[in-house]
Length: 191
Image (cartoon, rainbow, N blue to C red; front, side, top):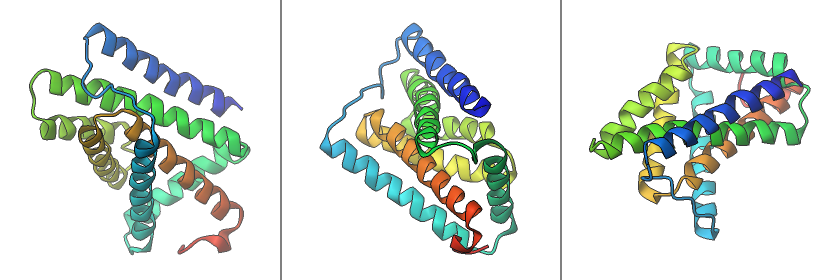
């Protein structure tokens, strides 16, 4: 329960800080939020692409990828194994909202506002996103790639709902998979 409270505090705090900065700096690029059938399908499809990437990477014989998975499993066991399905969904949703508002809504859109090209705004934001997730060099690189993808989704759709939903869905399904394979190791695709 402490982890859930900490998540609400940190991820919710990120969202609040991002919204304050967005308002203070009058950043409106990318802050459009449309919630309709097309956007839901777009987010679902984009999340499936990320999930497919995760499962493909799990098949590759790189020790850096095994190290990341072990770190995630250890963190899950220590902090999240007692969380209910609804609580895991809340953690995922809060991460999607907090991190996307900060990195895509404020940073990426703010860099675009000062006339940086979209590709450079995405790249700089992705480097910062990677640094925020830099548990290992491999994790940093993967977080940068995921961030580039999320940044591109924001530019393509001009809708904050899409990267928020993709981030939240990805986190939720990965947490469910880690939960299942941690409780039942024979369910893992490859170990």
